[in-house]
Length: 226
Length: 208
Image 1 (cartoon, rainbow over the protein chains, first blue to last red):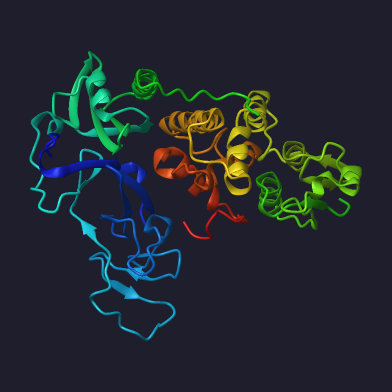
Image 2 (image 1 turned 90 degrees about the vertical axis):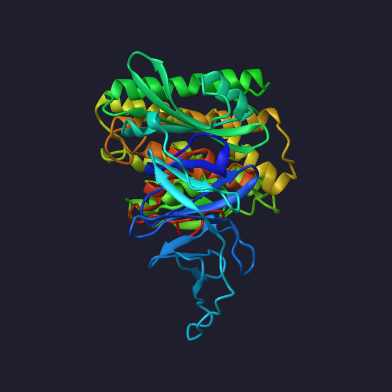
């Protein structure tokens, strides 16, 4: 998997956060996506819009290997085709009724999607391929992804990289641009990191978030408000 | 135990906290509906006679009136060590989160009420920032819990702390916060939904 900006591959979420038979939402550059995992463990990424009435599919549920819309229960199989309409159980839905699947890859502990129509296939990155990665966490950061990339020491033009942060082992950092001024930062540790190391990395993520948001003039301080 | 009575508003997340806990405990309460929106009945003399400060919900348990979700949850959890640990360190952790739910986390409830009933916009108000900050405190805690193998706020199973905190996370979409920004909260919401006896309220879908 290339961490560069070529090919249009984006790291949506940690694989560990997409449980079997569940659906989650994700947003890439303002484009809303439904990310779901079928009963066989295969991940799928579609536009977050039911072809029937436009309801967000990420609010739906996974049943019998298909993603069902919460609104009217229409079910869509792994190829995006509608396979079942509860109000017309005897109808075989025409092939033109279909959701819009995107190319998906799952590697280095992350679910990736290509949001560009002719996105080239991901290429190998030796540093990222050289280790097995243990998920630490993902954080939403209300700051431009490029600023966060600079702050964590990401090589120029990369959205993901294996970083030599310190002597205790490598960190895989991956950035998802959510919209202008907001991103998700995914963090993984090279196996076999001890649990203390994982806690330290989770805390480091919070520091990165706090400093990036301070630079962006965004402060989210809990307290007692009226 | 004499009959349980709950003075209740279906759309109010504080009332839902108690309805959810009652259901998880397998208890039935006679429900008395209080018309908060649009009736404003929480300020009527009749309701103020029951709840002098106008707090909802009100639980009558063993002949006593308990006003407010935090008090009602504690009264129901009393004598149930699985939900309210007896070991002081764990009890202290639960107390910490109950206080958090009644304090900083109120910002999420105020945001939701303003967005649903008060016409608040999507601007970055101080209240919205405080509400996001409160959700992040929960998210960060669950991240660390998961790294040490835990799935709940305190200990190895759900406690009354999880019930007090749950609606704020489950209902955050009502005021424009997406689950996708809180992956650890999302997984925990799923775990709570999977508890035997779980019930929803408007805004929390039946599936997931």
